[in-house]
Image 1 (cartoon, rainbow, N blue to C red):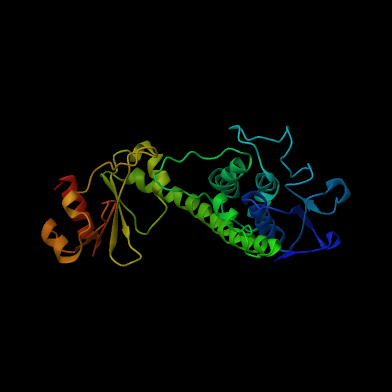
Image 2 (image 1 turned 180 degrees about the vertical axis):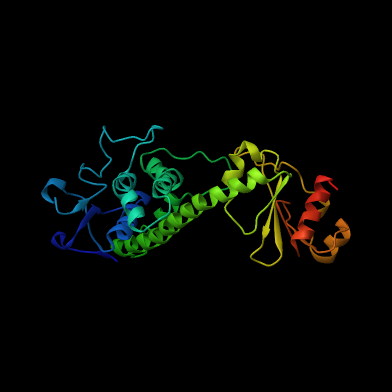
Length: 300
């Protein structure tokens, strides 16, 4: 439970007031998950040495602040921000206490996948995204919660709302990374046994990163698995993490077709859908999905 208190004596956590950022918002959300009950006091003037019984972060130049010259850095040179410093100190303990499978691996994966990016942005390293449209990072989204001009929104109320959203997101991040690591070994075993240019999974597993990082999987061009919409899904595999073009292209004439029109065009009964960008197709059965893939690969 999170509560924002008006008296410092009531608090067990202290952070800065004013404009909020993803750093202290996600730090607060993480502490709520870890401590269960967080009573946070927001201020702009604090000496952590005066409040040794309270967790002070992102302010005061103490253990969990990062506004000093000698702030700790990761091995890749990215400095820690308050969120990262708290995660570094307490993250593994949280994962162990909640019986997460492979806690050390999950801890490292979360830092790399999620915490590191928020720390980097808060320390002034903004991502360069080459796109013809505006791409909002998680840090940009948290900024939206700051009181809008002439809105009359209360600062603490908005901070509370931002933390609630952040808690939901970070909880799902933990689940997601744990699932990926659990699935990794299963997918690796499937790849070892796969002698074809398509990989068949008995259930959907987060396979993408494993596939792109495996030399043994370099020839696999399609993945077939049961779809949560019914039938079977067929996904193309991109060439690499950097090159998002497909290892094998789906025929252009299938683009955006479905049902009878697609069956007639392909000559395959039970071929139900092809996405407009041809990265995903679907079939009524596994046998039909295999037939579609073999047709595209020109295999018997």
